[in-house]
Image (tube, rainbow, N blue to C red; front, top):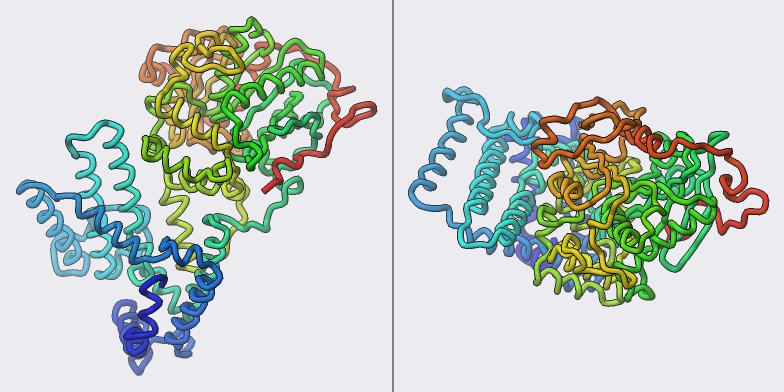
Length: 626
C-alpha cells in the first residue's frame, strides 16, 4: 500500500471501498462456498459479519504510521509494489517467447491446462494437473477451478521464462548464469501464493479470522522492515550461553579480531593433541554449538577431545583495513597459542566454509616456512579453494556487483544483513517466500528453531576483506594460481599444503557446491580422505549420530591407510560406499588413526582451574556484540 497506493485511499479508492466490501464477500461466497442463508459470507460459520472496510482502514493506518516514522524507507520506494511490478514488467518484456515453434508449444500447453481443468470438473477427458510444484500441494489449489487455472498458468509461464533464459544466445557463461539466476528469482517472486487475493489459503484464513491474520501479518512486516531483515523464528526463544551456544567453557585468549574459547572436558582423560576449530566469520560460530543434541562442539568434547574454537569479532568501523591476510595471521596465532598452552607440538584443525578456505591458505604458508608440523591434521567442512564452479553466488560477483558492494561499505564494513539477504536469495522459496506467506499473509506466529535463530544472527564483514575475497578468489580465482597471492610476506602455493586432510562436502550444497569442494583434492598435496555427506551446507555438517538422519559416501576405512583419491568426482561416486547416518564417527576414527595418545584432563586441560588465568565464560563477548 506504499507510494501511489496510499493516495488512492484518499481519492477514488475511498468511494470504492463499499463496493469492494460487497464484491469481495460475493467472490468469497462464489468460489469458497462460504455463504449464509441470505447469500452473505460469514466469519468461520459464527454468523458474525466482518466489517471489511474497518479491516482495510486498520491496515492502512498501520502502514501510514510506519512510513511516517520511517521517512528513509518511504522515500526509497523499496516498499512500493508499483515500483517492483514495473521493474518485473520491464524485465519480462525483454523475453521474446520465440518463433512459430515456441508459439505452437505455448498454445498447446495452454490448451492442456484448460483441458485438464475441464476434466477435473467433469467436462473433459483429463483430470490430472500437468504440472506439480510443492508450493501448490495443498488441495485447495486444485479443488477450485479459478485457483487451479491460476497456478497452472503461472507454472507454465515460469517454465517458458526459465527456458528462454536457458536458451539465450550471445552471452558469456557468467552473464548467462546471472540471467538464469535472476530470472528464477523473478518468477519465484511472481507466484500467486504470495498475494492475498490469489492464494486460496490466505482467503480462507482471512474469512475465518475476520482479517486478523492480515493485521498480525502487517505487524510482522513492519517489525522486519524496522529491523532491516526477514524474521524466520521467535527471536525471544533463545539466549546465548543459556539454551544456545551453551557448552561450558572459558575464553582463554583475545585479540581485536577474535576470542579463543576452550571448552571444559567431560571425560577423565583426553586426546593429547587438541582440536582447534575455525568457523566462518560470515556467520556466528555457534552453528557448531546449537542445542546440546545438535552441538558438534559438545559431541567432540564428549569423545575426549580438548576443543578450542575461534569466535570472530563482527566488524565495525575500526576494522575497515582488515584484510584476508589478517585472518591468516589470526589462524597462525591461534595455532601457536593452543600449542603453547598445552605444551604440544601440533594441533588438529577444522575450517568451515570461508574458515576452511583460509585454513588451506594458512597451511600453505606454514608449509612454505617449514612449519607444517605445527598442524597434525586439517578437516575442511564444505570449503572451496578453486572457484570456477562456485555456484549461484557468482551471480553477485561481476564488476558492476563489486562496485555496488563497495558502495555498501560506507563506514568501513559491510552490514551483515546484506550478506544474509544474498544467502537467503539462493534458496528464496524456503528462506524468503515461505515466511512471507506464513508470517505476513497467514499471520502465523514464529516458531522456536535454533538453526533459524542462528541464520538470522548476521555478522558484519570488514570492507577491505570482503572486497579482496570476492575479487581475488571468487572473481579472479587467484588462490589456485601458485604465488599469485601472499600473506604476511609469504607467497601462497596450495601445493605446499602437505597436512593430512579430511575433506567433507554436501551432496546438495547450494553455497559450496559439491564439484567445487571436490577440487580441494586436486590442489592439496598431503594425504587426503574425501567424504560426501547427505544434505547441504548446514545439515550436511550439523548431523549428530543421535539424529539418525541422512547418510554419507566414502572409500575405504578411516582408520586404515588411505587409498588414492580417484581422479574425478564421477569416479569417486562410482567407487564410494554408502553408509546410513552421521559421518561424525567416521571422522573421529580418522583423528584417532593420526594420533591416539591420551593424557589426564587436569591442569590447563580444565580451563579456569587453579592457577589458570582466563578472560570470561564462554561464549564470550564477541559473539554477543551487535
